[in-house]
Length: 385
Figure (spheres, rainbow, N blue to C red):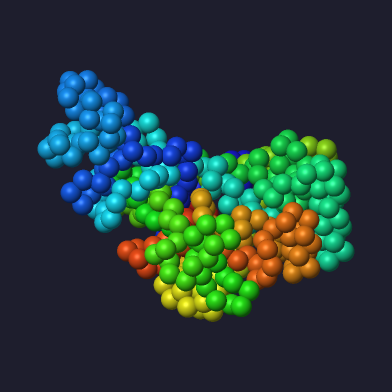
């Protein structure tokens, strides 16, 4: 077996993905003109405005909306993209990460984070009950020692115990994922997400403000963001498995033999976690009447059964608590203890919220699902099998 095992995967976007750059776009870059939402490039726009002092004055007063006085060719010369849009311009759009040419891609760190959660979930589920209870005790002691437990670190002690006590002993040192190849700018769209809330009586409502839930999703708070939709050609990503690191022994060893086996079989375990998510979310969608949402997960389960050689991941923003933590493998009692400790959610059921993409005014898909399809290589022992 090669010391470094490299595989290339096609990345198929199954539902729109948002991996945030941290940038929030507003009036200086965005405008709705003639039924299209325009995003303008700051450098090109600044150069054009410097040649047009009258328009510069209007831009200072109105932002990008002032560019309605330009003709379409002038706008296109300064635009990154324009997309069909109904209604007023969004107040804010969360930007997707892009390369220096403005092309969206999927960072290797986001892919690796999803794999880490999946492997930790499987590792935790494989432990005997006494060991899981002991781990829960470690989490509680850690929270008491830090004095002010923070929700985003609720499963940090679990992850350290399962995946490595420090960066030097991190199991996923042996699994390296490159950033994906970029998609054309045409694959970048602007979409809207709203937050569904499952009430204690089992009814579905929508978040308008903290503590304010409404029956009509059109009255709910909109979250506008750039989304990577399926590009004309699939993206690609390279994954490298370092067997030399996995074969280290003694104090340098990356976990126990059982944990190292998890990394060697990462594809299978990611799919086990994906099935766990899909089964529960399909049931949720059916229970509350989100037909398109439930149908997506039913179709996802069918895809996984028909194509077990691919890898299914839920990545990026908006994927929810269930996708971001291994803690559900602790079982209902363990999750209840975590919730009490970190103040997760108010009342039951839990998790109560889902971020759902809207098309028009209808709730449709969960964000962030992708499929990695291995590209056979002549040296891959699976090639031609």
